[in-house]
Length: 29
Image 1: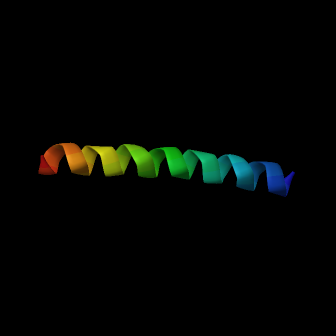
Image 2 (image 1 turned 120 degrees about the horizontal axis):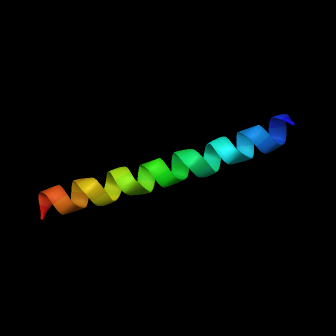
């Protein structure tokens, strides 16, 4: 249970990090 929730949290965090990074790059350019 903990591993599953932790895995989903990591995936969700990674997606947010990607969107944030793309947003920063888009703003910079």
